[in-house]
Image (cartoon, rainbow, N blue to C red; front, side, top):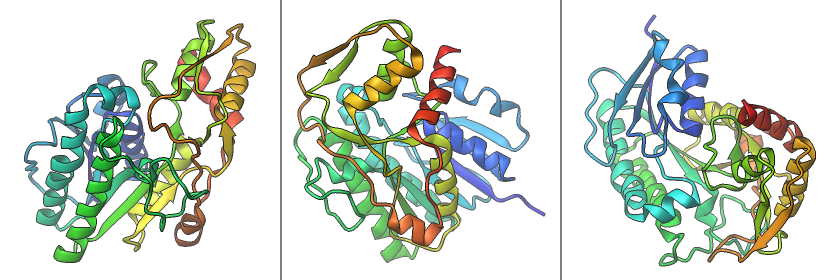
Length: 310
């Protein structure tokens, strides 16, 4: 019996490489596309030895033509950390627009199911709390973060257009802050920043007063939700994240406690348009996918810190 084939763009990145591994472990054949803008060969080094894994180095902002049957196209390619999209705003917009268009075109040609990896950033600095999928967001389209936020909002609009016009079976996942092994030390996001500083006894830098909140989902929980969504019948956006909400200051203190670090906490000015609150309403995922996270922040941080130390 032929294995079903999944093509995943950005498959050498943090979430993408974990998803490749998850799919291989669930008996799929995987084609991974990545140009290593933020991905790494280290993330897929073990996977390259797998007989059902194939890697193709390419920029998905250019036309994609892959021979053979493809059952699922997962568009994960993105410059997702603030450090990356602030440094490379045009590339961020291109992978969200041209990259999404090319990935959708491939799915249409292959008659594949399409899954877009979107983000909680489509909600911007939310005026609704927690954030439901029905909330339209509060985004500054011309601000410094607009390149990422609007690239994802456009990619969602394009995905739904392909669903309505071409009757393509599409899925959209809105991913809330996810963390775990394989995050880059210099990623620029809060958890790798705090962990890297703590294990090197350097100051943990908090931007603003530390009272802004985030909800952190461990990678293993997210992967379970992604696979369930990929196989589901829903075509509407679905939030995936952990609804447990923490202030940034609480996170910093927890990292210091787990690492037993001597680092101090310092404060700097809050970046422009930085969201004040972030918490997913996952009632839709619970109902449609029978999904919910199991790994608490303390346990997830212990696993992640252990990987960072190695």
